Length: 601
Ligand SMILES: NC(=O)c1ccc[n+]([C@@H]2O[C@H](COP(=O)([O-])OP(=O)(O)OC[C@H]3O[C@@H](n4cnc5c(N)ncnc54)[C@H](O)[C@@H]3O)[C@@H](O)[C@H]2O)c1
Ligand SMILES: O=C(O)[C@H](O)COP(=O)(O)O
Image 1 (spheres, helix red, strand yellow):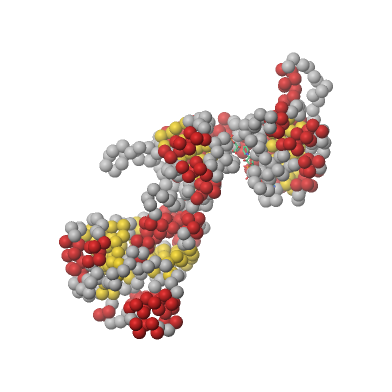
Image 2: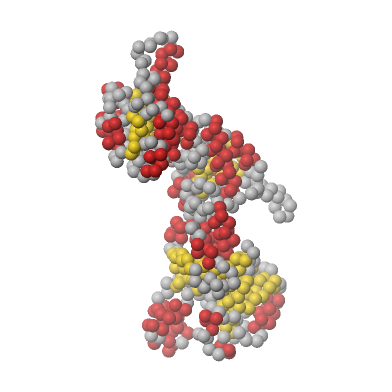
């Protein structure tokens, strides 16, 4: 979806800005140029990056840019960090989640490049290509010193049988190698199909390896996984390859093993610190004659760069157009067809949350006071087709957004699918989601959503409220007080028709209205003159009424109220603008209404 370049009144709206501080292939960037301002700025210092980041809505990086918590916190407009590659270890994903920033990557665009590079290093190490190249360039001709080994018939031990590890296996099987692997989470059918025989421990694998190659992420369980103790168990003829991440091999231990001849050679593409500090163990490894080293080139092929660039740029476009990306690192996976079903309900549930916060918290009643809000537990029930979806995360996020947005400053919180759960937890909001296929046939629309807010008010609090209304009620029995507390549960129900959200029940009243614009919601006795009374006061305040809807008691509630005289109703008025508190308070009187609230949806 393209971002409009003009606003509703025809004036030019500035295009959202995207920052690219590293070399990213132009193939994807060309897609962005249509609707966005794309700034390619290579070689920025961390300080310079921090200074300019507040202008940007998207940041596209590779592995060099450190996307830190400080950077993310300064990035007030940022909606997405896109990693044009696989590894997100240079991105503080936890902090991005906290700020509601989606992190996306390209999980498969460079797999083949990384696997082929691993094979290139394996053959270079087997045939001393690095050493031989330096030797011949120095004018030497050392044929007997540079005799190598063949891959055919040797055992290739693969740690990590994911996308790259299995691709390496498939290529290496064509060399006639014997393939073994270690991965506690491996998919056995994929492993068998790639002719890899699994070992149950790393120790078992290491003993057999002629070539050892690592293809796991850098995580707590893989950090330093090949250290002195592990190297000591390997054959002295073994050669080690790392095209995954620096930090998985102890660089000092590997240097020692190469020097003492307990390991025959290594092919290394990634280092603990990149680029390595001069004189560091990584630099000494690079300089070692038994090592073939490359500067993190695993993904550096034209094809891979084109793939990852197009992959992440398409995702940036989706996110900046308000849609979901296909491979977010910190957001749940939502299938496109589910997303289409959910989208109008996302709007509905957000409006329900916002209606709840605005209608119930500051509700002015005929004792002149605002109702105190103790409600923190919400039951969100999905009925009909919605109940069958595999995820309702966007609805959960929409509720949290709706509940919190009216009480948060506009420049503050970016509440979305990424951080909704965290923010709800921080604010003590508990949401229980339920799926119900009950009453499906009774309802005119197949999917209803019901929000029920359960008060955390105790029965003693209910007694307190009752006592303030009538002193005799101080003797209200516990069971009755509990019933009173139950009745205080607030209910909002809605549905979607023709892609438009409708509210069909508010509290004890059933009425149909579109939750949009400025609404005045009044509770009154269902008797003559109320509409005229409210209309004339609003007229005096210079307000134009766009529509009016009277919601009678819901049939479930009718039996609770006495005769016709005592029955209540809800009046919902759509207004062309908000009115002050004084006007709302003026509506509350014996001949007027019992309670009133003003909401903007
Ligand atoms: N050098 C480069 O330019 C380059 C390019 C692409 C990928 N990579 C790196 O390659 C690595 C693998 O990428 P991938 O796409 O195959 O990832 P992947 O997620 O598909 O596979 C990783 C595998 O590691 C396994 N694993 C996790 N913890 C393990 C443990 N403790 N022991 C054994 N196995 C474990 C997982 O089960 C998984 O099967 C990543 O670190 C990635 O960043 C580097
Ligand atoms: O994680 C990756 O995708 C690779 O390590 C490639 O990193 P790069 O984009 O910096 O080449």
